[in-house]
Image (cartoon, rainbow over all chains, first blue to last red; front, side, top):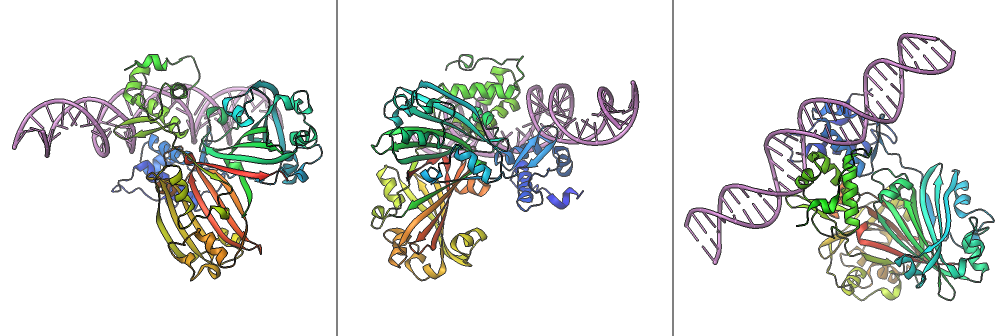
Length: 261
Length: 261
DNA sequence: CAGGCATACTCGTATAGACGAGTGGGCAAG
DNA sequence: CTTGCCCACTCGTCTATACGAGTATGCCTG
């Protein structure tokens, strides 16, 4: 093994920068320069204690800085590792175009298969419930809604959790209320039911996940979520669906195409 | 002052949940329920040490959990406070429509004025430089580019840092290379120069900020950034500008309107 | 050879203490 | 009354220590 000094340098005792920050800086730089590669193990806490001559809590403090930046993650009993950048899923703005409504399979499945990854959908739940204030507003003062919840996984990793809300007068008793909405998904069914889709509106936020989201998406620390709320409007200007999606930010790139009108 | 027990409950020594997590849970719940309001001060470390009968580092550990979630922020010498949600700026997908090109003022200024906040633009830098690999690819194998950097502030708070890159053969010697590009901004100038804009492509990512970004945007810990890369294409299909923008995620909501084609 | 156990190494949690530095209020001197 | 200092309270940094729990490895036993 290469000796630590050759990788990591010394502390500057005259600097007013906190020791744990100096250590974090050195580790960050070493990672940026590729001295530690993706997935590779960093020196253990004990080794860094030895190398820098500081206490263990100080080293741990450095690690927690890097964890907060999403650069590394710790595994109990194993070590601290450079966080690999997972393959990202690109969401194009035309992903709901009618020509993309495949027969039978959902867009997620088709797309993942094409990319060579193994897609899964679980935590399927379809039920009627009371609309939250926000959903009610978006759907135009609806009291109760049909909610369709599902979680998407790529190669076993949860990447997205989505809930669709539809007004009961549209969805109740239709195939939309079934676990499997059939070919073309719920947008296909909506159009068959006479709700010709006109346009979508998407709102995008980014924030740190709640503890619940950390669990359902198995998020590492230092990974934000992208919160996307899409409203689908029919040609009569009525909001016919609201889809609330929380995505692991390290697994997604959203892409939009805008006319310059 | 209300006594802590009435606000915070006790620890469960039989639980296998770590003490610092239990404390974090209780504080989080108290915040969610509005027992501590936005901007309000949480109990001091000493008070929580007293209340729970734990060591100070354990309390600090709880705080660091909440900080990582972006829920609270600490101020040296003052206390730990519930992080107020700043007013957000909504970016609509039609914000570059020609009809929005105001005379003289930039879109940012106009919009902020309308919203009643005090806008500023600083760190203006306009210079020619070598194109990075990524920028070169996006602009179609260009070696050198004109780079326009600027930082946007709302009510004194930096919210966005943006850099526009333009091919030299388009921008050199034009008003685009001046600090003030004139009415309608650089898109106005580009069209005057015969580059009729056709469409934009925007790529959106979210991630934790680098230390540099923390500094320039004065980000609190637990606040991610939205990284937006926009490419402008003219009617001949040529990429005429790439704009790389890093935004404080807690200050923005992006909004897109998509046709259902 | 296979299974299981001991062990060493990893990070996780928690304690107790020390000193430093930023903030704000009150008190004393002018 | 104003100025300036001191002090109490706040969080920031760091040390030293202890034990627990997950992981991997190799040796020992059957």
